[in-house]
Length: 117
Image (cartoon, rainbow, N blue to C red; front, side, top):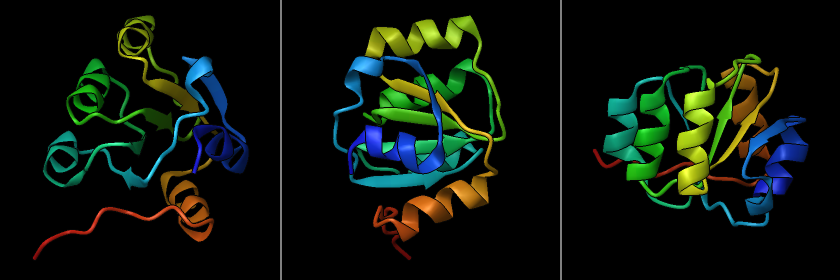
């Protein structure tokens, strides 16, 4: 699924790196705990979160994620947008809650990462 499709599905606003919305996304993760993102996420994923701090962008960069969607109309700081711009990470925000946003993407065919027991 392309990032621009995610934007349309979530009725999201692109805040950073709009020129990268043609990139493909292969999985999604909805999480506010960056330690879980580090443990379970693979590359080419979108991160949906309500956590707004620079560590979110740094974590996404470390995990080779290509897009972050802030839910509940949360707004990243200018510092966060600058970090994302340096890495080419698309930043969006939508007014949906995390559960709803994840459900929309899942029901539209975007899978999550498999968790090993």
